Each structure stands twice: as C-alpha cells, then as structure tokens.
Image 1 (spheres, rainbow, N blue to C red):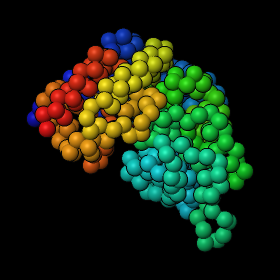
Image 2 (image 1 turned 180 degrees about the vertical axis):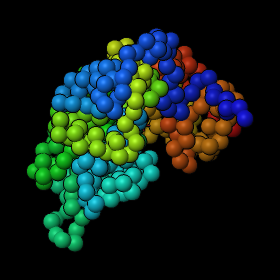
Image 3 (image 1 turned 90 degrees about the vertical axis):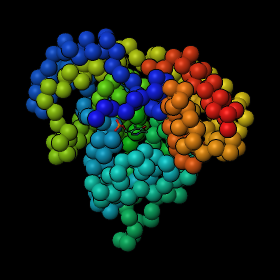
Image 4 (image 1 turned 60 degrees about the vertical axis):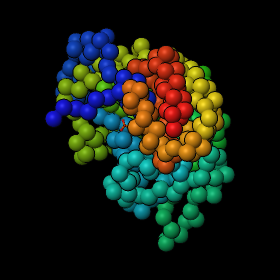
Length: 350
Ligand SMILES: *Cc1c(COP(=O)(O)O)cnc(C)c1O
C-alpha cells in the first residue's frame, strides 16, 4: 500500500519538516557510540550544548517530547500527586493520559486565556494538606503555549508563577517544545525562562527541523533519576549520535531563522483575518501557530480542510469550526500567502 500523498504546502504542524541535505550530511558523518553507556560523543555534545543553552547542570537525549514530559512527571510525582497546568496543556490533551497511567498523578487545570496564568491562580489551585486530598506537587507550564495560540509566557509571569509554586513547596516543569520560538520572538534568552524551573526541555523535531528527538534538562540529581525512567520505559538508545548530530546542526543553523516562521505566520494571519467569516482565535499571533475560527463562513473545519487539499494545502482541524495553521522551515512566505489565497477561494466557493 502506498503512503498517503501529503499536500505540498503542509501547515498541519511544524513537525512536517524533512531534514535538509546539510543536516543529513551531518548525520551521515556523525561520530557515534553506545548512548546507554554514555559513550556516544555526539549525544554527549548535544546534551552539553542544551544544558548550557538552558542554564542547567545536565541534559538527557530522548526520542520525543512526550517522553521528556512523562519522565519529568515520573521524577517529580508519586501516585496520588496532583499537577497544576493550563486547561489545554499538551500533557492533558495529547499524551494518552500518561500522567495518570504512568505516574498515578492527575492534573488540576487552571482556566487561562491563551494558556498563561498567574501566581494567584496557583495559590487557588493548591490543595490544603489533608489526608483525604491529593497532594499538590508540580506546576507545569508550556512555553510557547500550543493551544493558547503559540502564546509566549512573559518572563514576569513565569517568575510570578514560580514564586507562588515555591511558596507552596511545589516543583516546576516547563514543557519547552517551542521554547526557542519564545526566545526568538521575545528576545529573552531561553535560560532566563528556564531559570526558575526544576526541569525543562526542548523539541528538536518541531520548528528546528530534526527528524527525531527532545532534550530534557535539569540538575544532576534530576537527570540521574530521569535515567532510571529512560531505561525503564525503553528510551535508552545505542548509536543515537546519528540523531543527535541533526540536533547539533539544528541548534547551529535553525534557531535565529525561527523569526521567519513567525513573520510568515503573521503574514498568513493578516490575510486570513480579512476573509469573510474568518476570526482569529486568539486574535494575537506571537509565534508560528495561527488558530482561527470559521463558524461565520457556515462551513465546518473539516469541510474547509478537505477543500484545501484540492489546492495542495493542508491545515489542521482543532474541533468543529476551529483550525490551526503552523509555519515552519519547509514553507516559504510565498507558500503561506498561497495557502491564505486558497482559503479565500474555498470560502468564496461555498
Ligand atoms: C509536540 C508537543 C509535545 C510532544 O512532543 P513530541 O516530540 O511530539 O512527542 C509536547 N508539548 C507540546 C506543547 C507540544 O507542542
């Protein structure tokens, strides 16, 4: 059976990137060794580089961002513990309820416009210590906040939440799948967002253009415990330097250019906001994610998504009438404008 054909302009996710020729060359010539034994020089170099980028003692290479989140939760939480996170956090919506299944912990959600909340909301979400209550244990933030619209947590908000969490003796975790998008968009260094965190990670397989991988960072003690879970869950690898070399290449070449993805997202957003029946939701576009609502076109997200395929464009469906377009390394400004024009044609033809 042949693989389904993917449209040329694929805005469904920034995971749609394919490794470029230079990245593949770096992978092909990578020095490698046994990662589980700590003998892979490329993995070691990548971990050192990310630890230093995030201002942490150590880091660990993992096959996915989901595993970064899950291992962090497993290190921080025990069965019966509670995690405080924004209502649509990836950890809740998109990880197979892993926090519950693996760590025996559940999530208390905080309602927050654009996924960003404050210290007072942490105070309100923390449970009083009683034998019958879950034990509040961890605050988890997403930077950028995916379902908040790719929103960037202001540094002051991160610090305020961290102060509140500390006052209650809670640990702090940052899901930094797109942390470097936040750093590039705001001009605030990733290490400053990461400073109040016990654990933080970034995804190599999103806007950075790598085929595989996430890197989880924290204190030496945190990483030592995380290694137990990495083995236990089957995330320990062998000659993973082939993959780490892609990460090193990406950190060298693909970070500053995230600004282009953000500019393309804004250009796309500006065009589609002017189309009849399209409402940006949320209205601001901070980074590379554009969420919008098509309710007033009279069409469902599914109808629009299907019709766009005929224009060689793919845009994601978020629910009934909500859609998400994501810019990345493999779509140009021209592609984004073409996608916006195609959306205009689909709406005009309804
Ligand atoms: C994509 C994503 C993840 C999971 O990363 P994978 O590498 O796809 O497992 C976690 N959190 C957020 C916010 C994401 O966008």
